[in-house]
Picture (tube, rainbow, N blue to C red):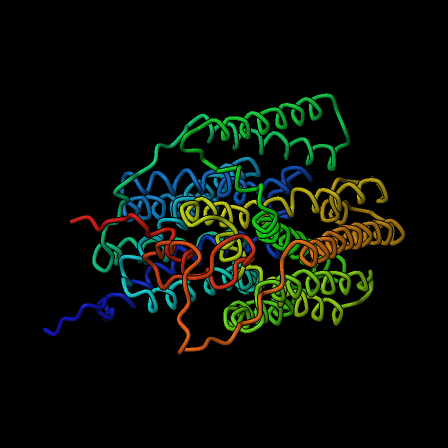
Length: 540
């Protein structure tokens, strides 16, 4: 056996292990979007209220976002493969429960449990990849595949859901998770090895409770106000949620090992990167859900036709995610962020051209144009966030950037979806709380049906216009806050240079790269990729 000083190239076990790890990753991503086209079927089968329908959609994302960082710390302490397998088992069981849920409350509970399990999968899967690919270049390629698979999961979720619903009942969109979970549990012990941190941090349980409770109470207040109007109970819940979130932030400032290092938000580029992780997912999840209802309940398309219309956008998103790293290397992070926000804004504005009787072409064009921005956001957020902070805080920055995606996925429906629901309640015929509930009422006149559809389309247009305006604002902030990349200056080999400061140690994931906030994240991708595996050891 030939050995060398460099890391050995991974063999068949590494690449097979990567394929196995991608299974849970696809499940987590797809379950954030697979219900978008399935909701009309779920509404007809279970008859949830407007508030229950919104909870069915986004309680999963809130559970993932609330616990993602906490489970990352638990994996450091108790073993990432162990947590990955436990989470996959619970995910499969909760999916089976959701498939056969007898009512809205049971489905919401199962979706919440799926979110708790999903929070164990992403950070542990990334850490396990570090053990499979010790060579930095091959690990970078593997993590690129990982990111593309995660983006593809979000993009193809509605398409997979539509295909299943064209053949089976609504529960099939959950039951499809079970064989993937079983296959992973059978193969993981053979192809993967345990990894845990040599310096595990302490999990602050009160911080986990404060963040989760604060988010849920605040979102409950928004949903209740949108679906049923403002009440004293909803107001009290919203105030309590804000108080808990404020308490959470104060606690993070005092802890030696905070759940989220809120001090990082003092850097403008880091803050912009995190918001770039949050807002595109919010816009995408809300418009995908609302457009799915529009295609089926307003235009009357069957679920498979609606799924096929979403396919071009999913393809554009996935391809963009794959090619973005090369484009960033050539044109810089600043240009990528500008393209991200302005292409999403343009795509969202195209969606406002849709109507009660048509607009399918505008919808397809909207998903393709916005898909460019969504794909860029998946690729550049973590690198930009990590590039804006000192090397010793790279792990915290990467965790916050990853969490922002999940919070954005949930907040999109909670905020923009609730805005659309509020407008429907104010402008609609007042027969029921949602469009599908209204259309299910017997004996409606064509005028009432037309009024309900028109009110829904108005809500869709306002929600997308608000999201577009927010992306334009972020694009303008990018122009102001993110510096242009410095032009490369030619070096003269004959004239030695004297370093102005001691060199910073490079990340174990790859070669050293420019440092400091002024770089705006340029060339700092290797540090982000190594953040999850730094300080980890393989269990014997």
